[in-house]
Length: 241
Image (cartoon, rainbow, N blue to C red; front, side):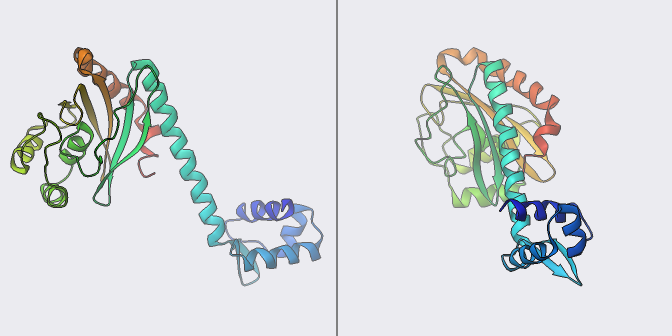
């Protein structure tokens, strides 16, 4: 296994491929051993051979992609934890992907608990700040399509009452302005979400607080927005996770 990994690492260093003899020389492996390992790695899809040269195969590229994805997830989780501790609120990161609201990461603590997902976030985008913020970034046709699939429904007494009213509200949201929601998704909770747009991907960072701390909501959201602005480069590479 160790020798096979050495070969894979060696091949990865040759963008335009390398022959078996060169790989054997660079890895310090005997030529018969190198040939045997190369045949096995080609058979398993980790390498491919073209005109006597060896390149990384699809299986190795999938491993690389998976590792990069995990690294991006870790970057987002670290950022959220940092902002959770510095601002003193639970922090949520969500994106709109393939027509669905997807909460990618949540960072909370015993002293700053996150809102319990008691009604599916994907189906109740009209009722929470995360969903409203994401929908506000979409073109009108995409908003209507979403609401045809997930129409407005009453979640609490404070939830917006119908699709038309929601669409009017989304139209009034200022560009890059925090979206504020008070007890529309969960009684006793207020939330704010800030928009993040990288390319064509709609994303958001959000926070929540108990109602008795509602006066902290907007200042905390502004602080988060400033923090995100400073580190948007680090975050942008993670938008596609």
